[in-house]
Image 1: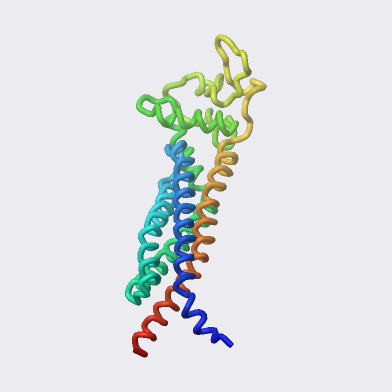
Image 2: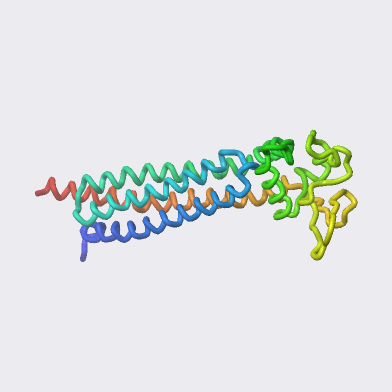
Length: 251
């Protein structure tokens, strides 16, 4: 009957090499998710808190580090080098901790989305259509037209701000054009106001908040799920390093 420990000893290095292949794949997945989420955020960067970008940046950094760590794992397993394998184990533990932190950060950001987003929306809304704030104006228009929303909670938010550049909004006679769905084939002037049937009545805090929460959930799931996958590599590498040292001591 084949001894279980002998079987594990004979095949653990091959299992570790195979694991490193999947480990590299997880790195690709992590980088892809980080880049995708960052791309989503960049489109609306003037309306988002910097903490959203830190989470996606950390995810990308972790993915890059995984490629470097895989080198130690493959070399340690192929050469049965206890030092390289131990280094691989230590680095895996660090990555595990970082991924857990990314996941926890994603959870915290998701639960604080409404508060963080509301603060940024109020601050940026006051700069809409001001000289030197063209990017903020474009970002607000993009959010309202793409999300089919208007204002923070509803269109009346535009009436409650001090907007130097548009006396019409202060007089409550018109709204930003992005607050309305301009009908196809419209020619000439189009006035977006509270009586316009094409007005978006839902506030952007709700719809834009859902969009940001969904993106944050991707960071959260990627961080926590892949962190637990690393546990297998930590167990295998620690076991292999222990067996290699045991063989040297026996010799």
